[in-house]
Length: 179
Ligand SMILES: [Zn+2]
Picture 1 (spheres, rainbow, N blue to C red):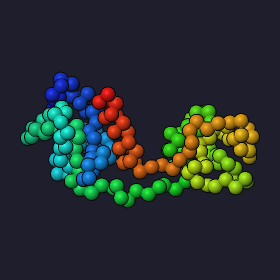
Picture 2: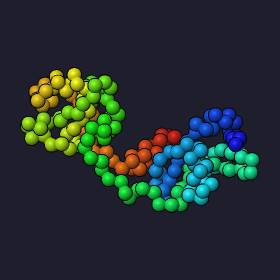
Picture 3: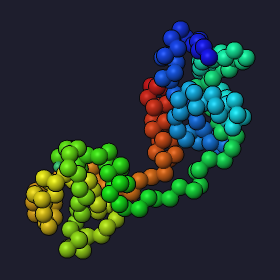
Picture 4: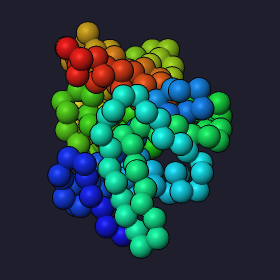
C-alpha cells in the first residue's frame, strides 16, 4: 500500500492523521486513524462525508485507489444508544480524573476520596468521589474541605456520553478554526 497526500505530506505523516467519524444522524462521534477509516470505507460501513473541499488523502494499493476524506459517516448504527453512565468505581473514577490527584495533581499512589466524608453523610456518587493521592487523602482524613483548607482542581461530575463529549470538543475546534 502506498499513500500520498494531496498536500505533499509523506506517508508516515498521513498514517498519523485522523479522520472524524459521524453517526448516521450526522453527529461527530470520534476520531479514528486513517487505516481504520479505510477499513470502514472498504467494508462499506461508512461513506465519505464531504463538508467542503476539505483535502483528504489518496491511498493506493496494488488493486485500488481510495480517496480518504477527513470526515466519514457511518452507514450502520453505532453504540450511541447503548451507553450508560458507568458505575462509581476505582477504575472509572481514575479514568475520569485522568489518573491525577484532584487536590495536588500527583499521579502516584492514587486512592479514592469522598469529598464529603461518608461519616458525614457523603454519598458514593460521581459528584462526591474523586481521585486523591495517599498523601492528600490522609492529610484530609475524615474532614471536609473547608475544615482542612484544601481545594478541588475541578468540580467532580458524572462522565457524559463519549459522543457528546467528542461532539462538544469537535464543534469548539471548528469554531476556533473559523475565527
Ligand atoms: Zn494529592
